[in-house]
Amino acid sequence: MLASVLNIVTLAVILLVAIGLHEYSHAYVSYKLWDPTPKLQWRLTTNPLKHLDPIGFLMIFLIWFGRGKPVQVNPSYYKKPLEWELLVALAGPAMNLVLAIAGIFVMLVSSKFLWIWIDNIVSGNYGFWINFLMQFSIINITLAVFNMIPLPPLDGFRIVKMISLKFANMIEQYTQYIVIWFLILILVWKSPIWNFVGNISFTIFRHIFSFFANIFY
Image 1 (tube, rainbow, N blue to C red):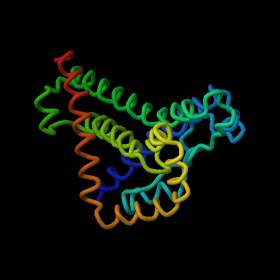
Image 2: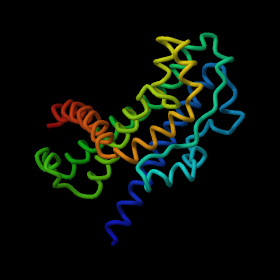
Image 3: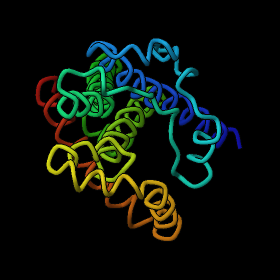
Image 4: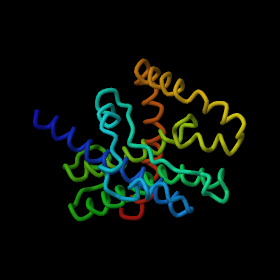
């Protein structure tokens, strides 16, 4: 029972940081591109609670699909609307990748100081701190991968807008229906979808892990 509560608390902390900084990155980059909207709406902060959607956050634990509180931006302030909107969109997943890399780096440095050999990390024989950092890294990579799915309202859809604005505008008209059907797909085929996202995420994790492991070990 205690272990289950600890796992839930650990997951909640990781998600708060990962989602909070993801949304902050959108706000920060948009503000730097001359859009005052995030600052006017008090979203230009690293405080994760400011980026929390309580219902969306709770859904993550209930159906493994949720969201943070989306940052509102106004592309009309951008000198290059399509290109800069893409930059703002990519800022979120990029932040998650940076967090994941930082987590792996700290994990390997900590392992060195704690005299934990690389074989023990790979086999899962490690303590709470190393386990936390591994979860932190994998979850951040998973968020980055998931958000790059090219469907509205996910960040990856901005790539579609760059390729064909006309097609993207047509698709955006059906965003609410796409969200509903995507939610249904996750509920019905949760395992295949998350296995697909998970396989990509673990592959990225292994490459980053191997890169730093070769340096430290």
